[in-house]
Image (cartoon, rainbow, N blue to C red; front, side):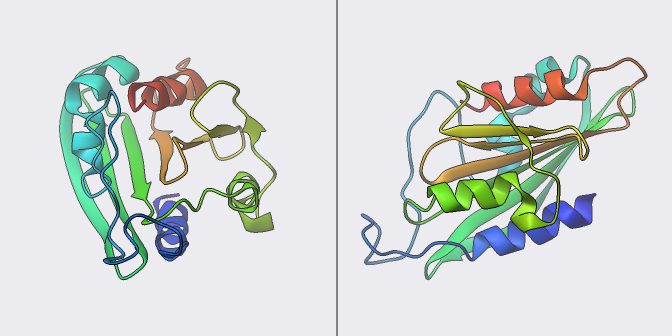
Length: 175
C-alpha cells in the first residue's frame, strides 16, 4: 500500500504548473494560512504528534518523515509522515501543495477514481474543497483547497477500530 501512495505522490508532484499563479516568477508554492500548522514539506509537523494521537486514539510512539518532492520549477511540494502508535497501528499522511491552483474538477475526479485504476471513492461532504473515502483501499483523500491535498491511510488498527472514522478525524485535524 505504501508503494501505491508513493506512486500517486510522485504523479501528483508533477501536476500543475505556474500559469496564472502568484508564484509564477519562481514556481515555488505560496504559503497559505489556515488553522493548522500546514507545511507540505513536513507532513509530520502538518498534523503533529498530539493531533495524530487524538485521531488515532492512542499515543504516538514514533514519527518518520519521507520528503518526496521539494517542489520548485512548477512541481508540487510532497512529503509523507508515518506515525507509529503505541498499540502497533500505523498512520501515513501524505501532504502535497501545488505551486498553482491545480485542483480542477478533472484532477479531483482523477483522484477519486485513482486515474481509472480503482473503484471510485465515495464523496465525503463538507470536508475541504472535496474529500473521498475508499472502502476498498481504506484510504481518505482531501483537497483542502485549490492547492493543498492530503492522502490518509491507517494500517494495523486493532480489531473493531473504524479506519474511516479515524482517517476522517485526521482530515478534520488538518483543516
